[in-house]
Image (cartoon, rainbow, N blue to C red; front, side, top):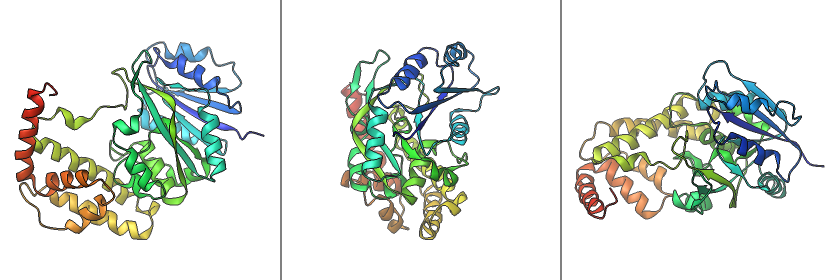
Length: 329
């Protein structure tokens, strides 16, 4: 007998694509599902579209009176989970028919606590842009190398929320979701907490058409690409890590003792980097601990940007000019 899976769909002004997404979930080959939808005070016709599904026994809809924001809306949905297994869903994608079936099969066969996977990136008309989101974002190597360790999620997020299938039993440690930093989003936190306490598995196959249309809450955008100066890139990198490790320190009870100490050291390291405008010769051991699992080039690039910005500015200027000549900036 199939275990029931609760699918959590957060909506907000999604009139253009939400019906197609709901239908792709309800038409899954895996039949024992309950779809929980929370509409975040939409002002377009999303609510009217959702009302057409109210009589469907597999669908339960909540209408928020005030806008919560997508993280708090997902938090609300996580609090509604009834089954032992749950999945997350965005409002504008399309799930391939066997997505739930293959995710559950992987979780049960390998005795996992969370399964996530790759995505096919498509445009608004579902034409393929990239066959693999993880390869485009250069996440594949890190995932393969660190899939059995919390290190996969510790420094940055390798898990895309709409690919997650996870067990309810970890929600006690996951909730409430941290809200200190905009860089610590719900899927990042879910993946980290489960990887600290359980077993995580990866599906290389793509079972989602991940739609990019210009209005996505989270998508393919790389914020640092728009910057013209190295200091802008460096400040962003530092701000991201300060937000992440501040969250870790504020939630230290959810981390093992050995990481509680490290989290504080790393936070102080990034605070110190804010004051180092040209060179830093302190606490390189902390940098090494954090980045040793990365590729050699990623390690060197980040080391120079963070600890030797004087040289990085020169290299960044040359690179920017070359890309501009080539029409890539």
